[in-house]
Length: 280
Image (tube, rainbow, N blue to C red; front, side):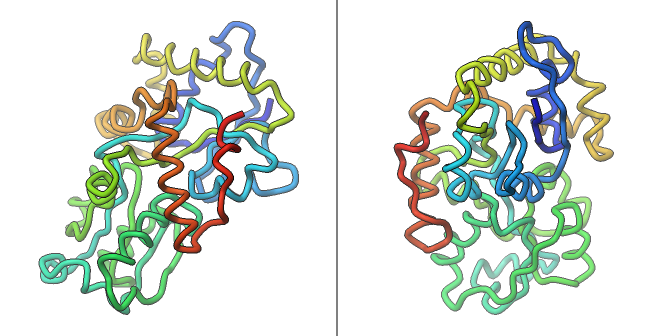
């Protein structure tokens, strides 16, 4: 079975057991490790993987071919994207300073970008200027060096941005949670509708549970793919993004997904979704 997910600690932690043949009855996985922007593109291609991790923001474009699985993904609280600047004075003045400014984002089909656009519509009256897409690991250096005015960052940047002497302009997770009282839908696991979706979901849940029961078993594998992160930062990443929603979306999780995609469709950022298609 072909699968694609990111090399980030939360994904490798969740899928460690299945990748290493520790889930009885689960088929062997042929894994592609790639940044979320790439996996979004893979899912939209004509010959995408059987199972793939994508951003929830990319879901409306692939629902005809893929089904959303109710497990294995990333939703959570206190884990939202950050808007950073190198200008202390700008950070003190607030969001309006982004009017007409150049902002780097990790993808235009990411939850981070949807949240940024929804937030900016409320908080940057004259609108931001140029949007530049670049790999997430290049954004903070570019902000620090003044190549761009602000950056939208994700993943472990939440824990490391101070090392770049950057300042927090906005925590979009805090904004979203205050607006909706819902978790943030970040990454989704999807599978081709032609496959045995119940079985795949069951194997993923068993892999999640194995990871929780044996948290040290995956450490070598996680760090091997963690892009030079320290064990401490990798563990913080896992603790933030792997939670009860990783085992089961539940009603709160589905409500969060519907709220995000519904608001984004109203703003013309994504195609309108028939919410019945979110469940198989």
